[in-house]
Length: 77
Image (cartoon, rainbow, N blue to C red):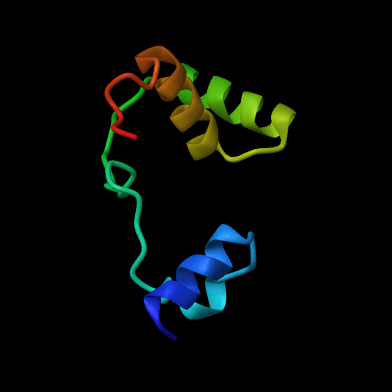
């Protein structure tokens, strides 16, 4: 497919995902990196309690709370 045809399909709002290789797509600044953190037992218990109450993982809660605290200002868009 020529670039002009691709652009026309995109401009017309057609689905162009079949023409794009999404296997290597990533969002800069959102790559994952594991970290280890030591927490007091009471924090872990409180976190587990809250995660069960909300029906989500402890990791999800920690990511959300950290993002809220950091106000997402350091994460590039």
